[in-house]
Length: 60
Image: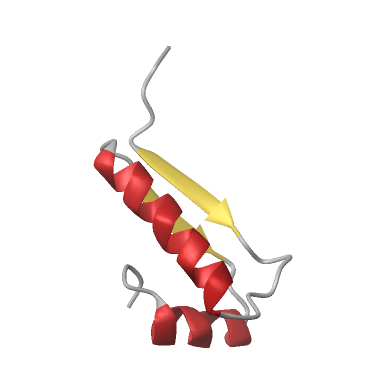
């Protein structure tokens, strides 16, 4: 089984509503990072992007 170096997650069909959703994303990013995997999120709508920038410890 080949190890993936990067995971790209498309969140264009969802909206992040609160900090709990961002905390789950941060946990996923940290878990993957600890396993040597880069995690990239694409397609965030404006509301989700603003919340990610405000709350996330991993996404600037």
